[in-house]
Image 1 (cartoon, helix red, strand yellow):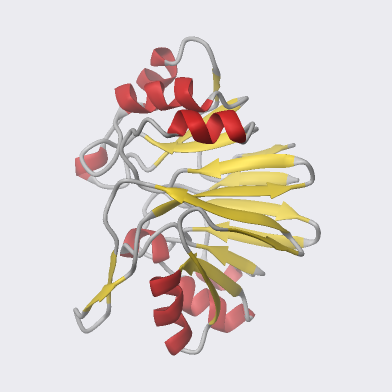
Image 2: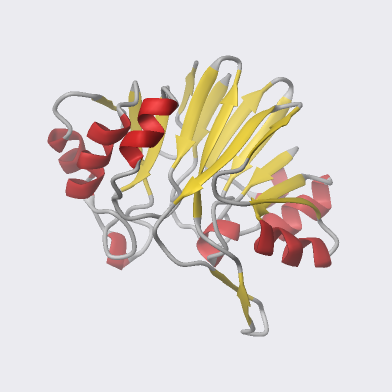
Length: 226
């Protein structure tokens, strides 16, 4: 399994002959190394409806006939646009041919704004536990710190956790460091920072706050193999 990070909250996983993109916000993302015209995802996983997470899902899915998994209300909306979607909800898990997806709670908000400035209700925000090849990846989405992260970690030994540290809209470095203690992952990667002025952060500060677990600060395009 190859895992790569591409700025903001974009994570790419290559496993079982499939390419999976989490929250593909490419256009307008000054920190990403990706180009929409070059990406060919088989599957797109969305944590919630905000435009800096849905991003280029519609174009990517139509161009590549990609399968989109999202919170059910968001999935229904994207399905109405002609996308092939599968809706899920918090606490639900489903095994697919590329791996198992389980949606966890996240404390945030969720709506999608169309090009006509129509605001679409996108259901509950969520995190995602992705399991394949005997490994577990946790993408927390946008969230605050919450106590049940400990339960998530206890019940799902996590190999890599992607946690937001940007503050203002999500956890900041201090709360994210506590989240690491709760989740107890083998490796943590900070995400959702420095894309916009309100979420400007120094990831090294987060790394220094995490004293008992391994943290890897990944630049856009960096990858690791599990």
